[in-house]
Image (cartoon, rainbow, N blue to C red; front, side, top):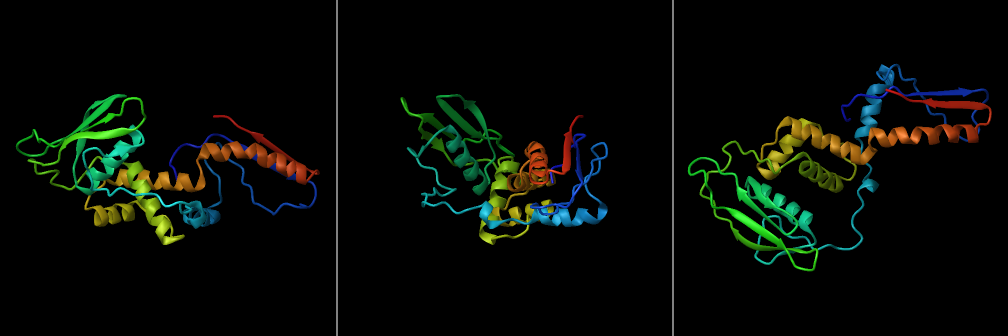
Length: 247
């Protein structure tokens, strides 16, 4: 679950008669934004939230040509700048390269190796430009030979929470309903699959990212509460449902 303060929301449902067409759903009051569930419900709630429905990750209808993560060639084209950076991030993680951008605008971008050990100035670089009159970007020049030793601890800032979260989701697609792993399990699996060490906070944020993409965010859930109240009043005319909010 995403660790963030909860607003002082309250949902009250008063039923003056039996429910007619709505399944009985337990609703808890919020006490100053601190308590949503009884202790007896907490573990069941977390277990239910961690279960992945395979329908949430449908396979693409049409086969998409996938570019190998460790492939960089002159003239390679990408739909836009974001697609190029995404591929570059995958390339850097797969080859254990830690890069930084020295230039990045709407026309061209260039990434260089951060450099570790001696000499610091590693000659590795890659540059890309936008094709004139198009949104397409193309790799123009690169030098992929390192003179540095790389990060001695196997760390890589290119493996950010969003990248790790996408990796976890891809694994969940293959597992067909396996529970979302814990942060420590995410970090251990990423080390095994990518030979890259990620900090606990990166694995923790990646897990929250996955859970939010599966279950939706708190803001999205809160926006549904007024509709829930209206549904209760419409399907159970003798009931009263109110919603108050505030910080």
